[in-house]
Amino acid sequence: MTFPRAIIAVIVMAGLVTLTAMASTTRKIEPAPHAELRVLCRIHNAWHRDCKAPDPAEMDERLRHMRPPTVCEITAIPYRLDITLRANDKTATDHTLKLEGDPAHENRGLYCDERILLEPGQTVRIDARIEPVAEGFAEAISDALAAVTTPAAGEVIVLAVQDEGLRLLTE
Image (cartoon, rainbow, N blue to C red):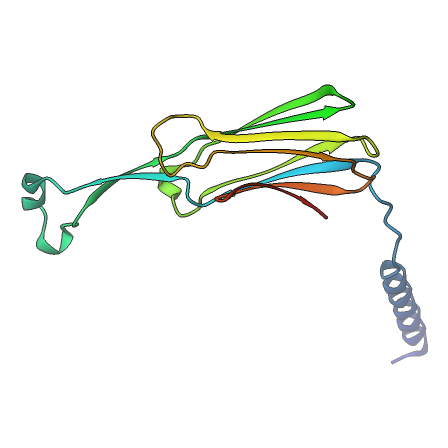
């Protein structure tokens, strides 16, 4: 290696080391200036199955190994989640989420992830209710929750919607 190439190699190496050092420095992350209500829905039992014995005439057309013991019609249970936030005894906001599933993906359940910004330091009353939109689903969940909280700046409050009902979690 010639002398000019060695100098260029040293300069390039020094530059790479400097860039690596600059990229690896830690930066202080400031907390968010607002609080947050995060709505997380994970409803696995969101399907209604109406099963019956298959029609014998229809089964005669199928091969013996293709004959199911029961035929089920799968319907997604549509839900409505109403959230009312009251700050200082005034209705601040109303939020309505409609949860609907696709029967083609019955193994996935119903999911949602919503973020609602809250004013930090202000006492907030959270009223939430989940119920099925249609009647006649015995396995559908129906629940209500009322809670009062005063979130700090950067705090995340989680409203969890699960098969068991509604829960409020604070981090």
